[in-house]
Structure formats: structure tokens, C-alpha cells
Length: 387
Ligand SMILES: Cc1cc2nc3c(=O)[nH]c(=O)nc-3n(C[C@H](O)[C@H](O)[C@H](O)COP(=O)(O)OP(=O)(O)OC[C@H]3O[C@@H](n4cnc5c(N)ncnc54)[C@H](O)[C@@H]3O)c2cc1C
Image (cartoon, rainbow, N blue to C red; front, side, top):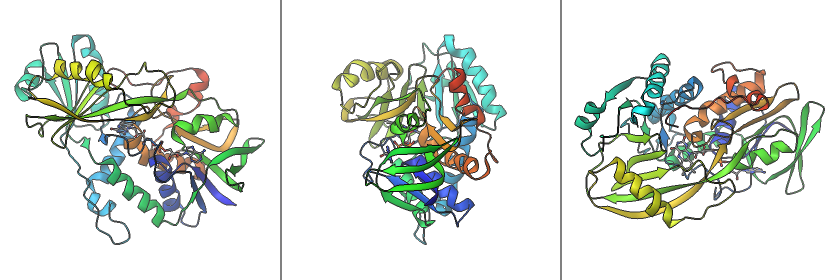
């Protein structure tokens, strides 16, 4: 018997356990995770980018909540009397760049961002060329630079998050949820691969790419599938340490990493399914040409490493789905479909899930527009322009 069962101990599951126990220390919180090496999990495969450059206010607010923790790292990252480990936080900012076709969208998003507390700078083509001589700007119309943003070592951040959740007394068990038992509008218990059955007052499904299969067991149909995503480490002969995290509308994402850059070019049309294969042509045919189209001042480029991970891609609108199935399931909450934004949003999502589970409604950030109702209604609530 548990008060709350959390399914999956990735970034979102750990953040949920942490917030549940912080809100109510006497709660009996059980986190179920089959693989503490996180071989398939998205957590740990990410690039650690944290940005406020979103179109939807909820995504901006969630990033701001995480930035507060990062900027208070010395305190936030110290657990059980141990000093906070080096986070490698690089507050170089995030910069979105667009051509003339997407300029108006960028301008509208810039306004939304400013209205939601983002300190950002509008850069025209000349500003971009003057400030970043290594950038190819002849096809660019404008850029927006958000100076508070940056990137960190996601493994370090996650190790602290996990340790903080552990320190609260949440129980982390090594097992897999294989079934859910429903009683009217409530999920009564979870069945584990070990044969154990745990009853719970609330069940929170933070199982990443496996969240939809679990939700389907109680009739929730979630348009989220695993989508392979490559990342490449490229050594550069030029010094690129001053560059912000640069993204363009084609999905190219470039940031300084080790002795060069880490680069991804998201292929949103890549078919869904669990696929971790590293395809060398992703670099030769897609990333290398795209990088040369956007930068001509990186010097000699040498590919040093390539890896893949899975996005839990929301095929409806590329944004997360958080909450229960209104009117049908009262105590079963889902958070998935992060589509590449989940690490930077995990903390705020964990807090939101805690509020839903304990109070039945949001108490800090209202994330209801990100709920399951829009899926049922087929209403997109996605990002516009650079995603
Ligand atoms: C290459 C790449 C780059 C990325 N870059 C960024 C970035 O820069 N910034 C950013 O914010 N995000 C980024 N992301 C996305 C981010 O990594 C994810 O959104 C985030 O880690 C998702 O965390 P999660 O806890 O929801 O899922 P996961 O980390 O996948 O965790 C889910 C857990 O659930 C467990 N589980 C599954 N089934 C069951 C079951 N039946 N019972 C119990 N447990 C189960 C799994 O074992 C897993 O550990 C990137 C992702 C990739 C792949």
C-alpha cells in the first residue's frame, strides 16, 4: 500500500517524487523503475539545454523554474551536507535565427517571451553578422538572444535530482509496472513484473516513451511515440566558446561542447519506434551540410562521436501532455510527450503533478492547457517557428 506510486525514475519521475515529499513529508511515495542504469531512458542522453525561448507561456514558466534552481546551484545542488558538484552551467544564452519567411513568427514569439518575463534581445541581420562573424547571415533576417539561458551537464543535474529525491525518503524500487487495475474512475493498484501488487491513492505515469502503452491499459490514448534523435560531437579548430546555443527553423541546434560543438538536426519526419542505431549518413548527408550552411567560421571540423536517444514525440503538437483524463480517471496522472524539452521542464512538471495529485488542481503554474483534454479535442497547442 502506497499513497502515491510514480512509474519511472527518469528526470520527471524523480522531480515528482521530490516535490511530493517536500509538499507532504509523511506521504508514502513509491517510485518504480526497472533499470537504474537508464540505458533506454531519455534522461542522460540529452544535451542539457535550458531555454526560455518558447511560444507557449507554460513552457517559458517551466524553464524559469528550472533556471531558478540552476542559479541557486550552490544551495540547491548540495545534498545531505555534500557540496554541490560542478554543473558546468554555460550561461551563454540561447539564440534563435530565422530567414525572412519566419521573421513575423519570431517577432510574435519575441513579444510573448517579453510579456512572460524573458530578457531577450532582438538582433537584425547586421547585428548578427557583426556579433557572430562565424555565422552565415546572408539568408537570415533576424535573431532573438535570450541571455539568461544556457546548457549544463544533464548527468550532473540528474544525479543531484535523484539524490535529493532519495534524501526525502521516497522509496525507489527496482521493478516494472506491467498492469493497472481500475475501479470506476480510479486506478486502484499497479501490478509489478515481480508479481507484487501495490495499491495506491494516486498513480503517476512518468514512464517516458513507455507512458502511452501504460496509459492505454486504462483507456487513455496518447499520440506519443519514440522518435530517434542523433547528436554529434565535432571538434573544431576555431574557438567557439563564446557562442550561444544556436537554433534555426530547420531544427539545427549547435552549442559549444568540449573542444568544439555538439550538433543535432532533429528529423521530425523520422518514423516512430524504438531505434537507437547510429546512422553515419545522419552526419554526412544532413548535419555536416546544414552546419556548413549556417557557420563558415568554425575552422576544420572533425567528427569525434555520435550517439542517439529517443524523444517521446507528441505527434499532435510537439508539446507535453500532463494531467488526468477529466471525468474518467480521477487519480491517474500522466506526463509525457516532451518532444525534446523534458529535461528543462522536469522540475516544474514534478511540482505540477504533485499539486494535481494532492489538491486536484494546479496551485502555482496553471498547466491545464497542456492537459489531455486537448488530445481528446484534437486541438493543437504547439510551438510556432523554431521548435
Ligand atoms: C539527444 C537528445 C537531446 C535532448 N536534449 C534536450 C535538451 O537539450 N533539453 C531538454 O530539456 N531536453 C532534452 N531532451 C529531452 C529530455 O532528455 C527528455 O524529455 C527527458 O529526459 C524525459 O524525461 P522522462 O523522465 O520523462 O523520461 P525518461 O528519462 O525516458 O524516463 C522514463 C523512465 O521510465 C521507466 N519506465 C518505462 N516503463 C516503465 C514501467 N513499465 N515501469 C516502471 N518504469 C518504467 C524507464 O526505464 C525510464 O527510466 C533530449 C533528448 C534526447 C534524446
